[in-house]
Length: 177
Image (cartoon, rainbow, N blue to C red):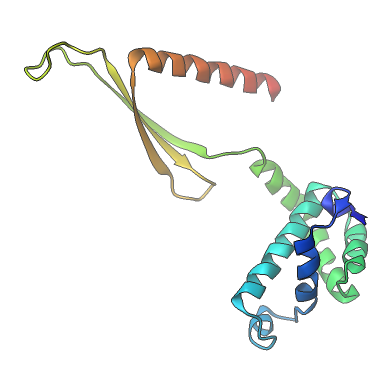
């Protein structure tokens, strides 16, 4: 069977398996973990299936009524589906905006530092080398995540090639967006 929240594809088996766990959720998270005697893995699986359902529905612009109907077809009780879809409808637009902001994104560049070293002469070197460019990139995996430094050293020629390719990529991306 095909479902709109899955992009008109079959529902993944792991989602089907976790619908029964999702159906056992009570009023509060405390009851979920204490009274229902769920193990840590059950709670993690429930969060994963909720994340998948909500993000997939938002990605495919599924309305709340259709999502509720499809979740009930998968075995989620009507009350649970209704409350989940009520929350989904309230936050659908911000969720879609967040997904757009995060899609096709890799690490974000938080900062750049550079230095050029050029040795004029040295008693340790037989021949004087060409200039070396030292780059330090601060890269963050996501907004709010601390940036990780990436350091590299390049010859002047390799740096010129890198710079030209980065400018070419920037021009291409600017023409697309």
